[in-house]
Image 1 (tube, one colour):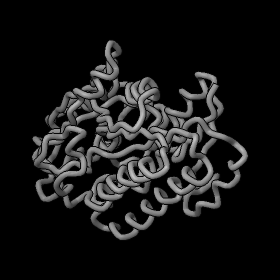
Image 2 (tube, one colour; image 1 turned 180 degrees about the vertical axis):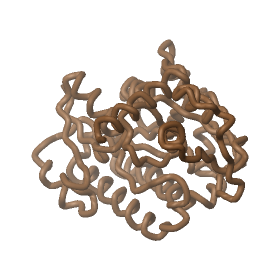
Image 3 (cartoon, helix red, strand yellow; image 1 turned 120 degrees about the vertical axis):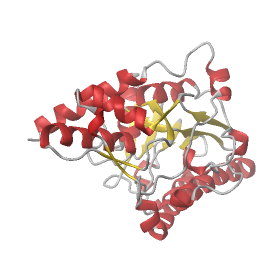
Length: 305
């Protein structure tokens, strides 16, 4: 049994991770906006008497779409504060713990091969620049503290996570599609996707991501891409959601005036595949995962009236 602190514990990844850790018999302690809020490092003092084996730092201020363009200054200050505070707490009070942090595939420059060695090279896309750079700085912080104080860490760079139990207002594109297609089918709203739909993205099912993270906890001071290795066009994802609802995909409309980000984003998974072998990284087929997410959303809508 391990003692584990999880920041961002009530978020999408945090909820699934905490559930899995508890199921495996570990003692789980959380940090969120109400408990041990990372806005001030002293808020974590409630855990000073506990010696953690792992700290999973998942907390971040982020939203998809144009949020990063509108609130880039606030986002920088919030995320730099959060990251600095958890790193300082780690160094000062929990140096025996292994710090496990989440990056973002948005930190990769759009014109570069997305392998771990290239993570800090080039310029991230302007639409997510602030968020992307705070995640890069988090990795720099991990490495710097490790080199100076001998601390151990892991850093995962996920593609877009999806699956059930997501927050109903989550505006990452796949959840937007699930919500918008529901409204199109049952409320006669328009199902609109941004751009021509030919931009390509990669998803990884939430349980597959958690499986991989926990399987690699024995590694130290490593960066791992965490993706499915399979990308699809936005149009293809939209059609999968339509199939899950039995909705005519020919009814989809496209808004060519909206910001769509980079045209293609797929991370290289050679390193993580090698470290996981003979285990597989992807165990959930994309259509199966989308159906589970759609089923969850429909149940939540009915439950909430």
